[in-house]
Length: 212
Image 1 (spheres, rainbow, N blue to C red):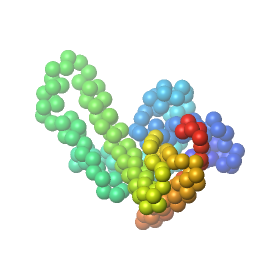
Image 2: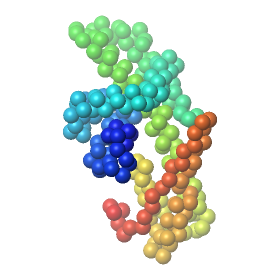
Image 3: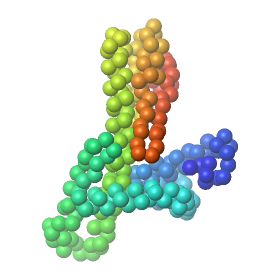
Image 4: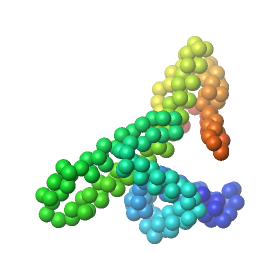
């Protein structure tokens, strides 16, 4: 994304540019607005809006995919991720019900605003679920492979913490290298779909303290 945006080679992208673009891209995956992203990361709103517009001009299939997720969730009140996990969106069902319309009658003003705020929140969840849940499922399966292999080799090691896409294992010093080899082998995964193949790797290191 940064490479095409700034029209430079990959090794010419600065750390600041990459960090800023990553913040906006992740915000988009969560269905967040330009204002919300700008507020959290102390960015210029106009700059974020320009990035978003350029992003969707370049990656039009992503916009179509997002619109499709919202359309299906609104119509069927559920979504399914790439490996079959289903999430129900009963909020839409309630939002479009007669009970909700009756509740709005008690609002003295801004009826449409109340409706739009809740609906846009549901839309963000619909956009986020297929990608975020799929990433979680991929990591969970990888962690399970590592856990089973540690048990099979009867190592004095434990998987003790996961933070987003990071995983920490604890072992005695003598077995640390063996645990690292297991993670290097079992954590990466290659996903094959109709017209593409993608490999998720794993960066590993041995440290004395988890903060490192």
